[in-house]
Length: 317
Image 1 (spheres, rainbow, N blue to C red):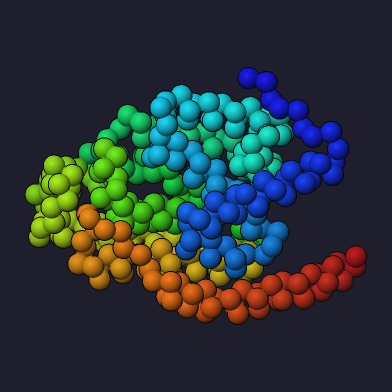
Image 2 (cartoon, rainbow, N blue to C red):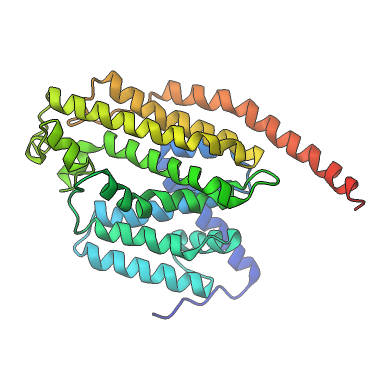
């Protein structure tokens, strides 16, 4: 396909880019309230990039989960356009324009986007996963690479290589994804997909037919209890990575972890009855988490700002 021609002037390009990032922020605010709230703790220069990555992932995911007449064709066309526009450096689609700018600005490997799009494509054909290993292989594309995409935007602490933080970013992406799977069991089965390992379902006497019928029983409760424990271990694996991040990004990750981890607490509080309802972290609790982290985030920014002149003077600059 032929890549669109960029606007003729630098001012027009900047205006289009600003509008694209605002569009992505609106998508994030509408569809990912907890995640969007956490991004408000980021520095203003980092925030738009995270919105862009979220909006791109959401747009591709919706082509599968909220399909039109030809979901396979729509996803393939969107994927081809995104990859061509990354090479060209411009798009006239607002989500892809913000994505192109973000990927190029932060040097995000294109392979991460390719793997994500492959996972979304697999959702058109794969209805379930035999075990946790198989689910993990799917989550490489649907979740792990999302953590790796966001990592360059968040940045690492002085002296910390990105490779050192990467395993923890992967674990956090998986923890968020597993949390979504547990919250959305009922919605996903209505779409013909189950993201609970089949061997664990069988061990607890749970069937796909039971999930489709929204039939809760003791076996489903125990299956969910085990899956919550598995998910919490992923959060534990991710936790050592937060201190490796740039100081001004840490509170955003801590808030997002608290908010998503809070979904697991809500699932437990609902006695694991998620087949016919979607549990949510109450707005009051979300705001409380945000408020607790806000002061720390502001202090981190001040410390980083104050440290910069000292760093320059110490080198004789």
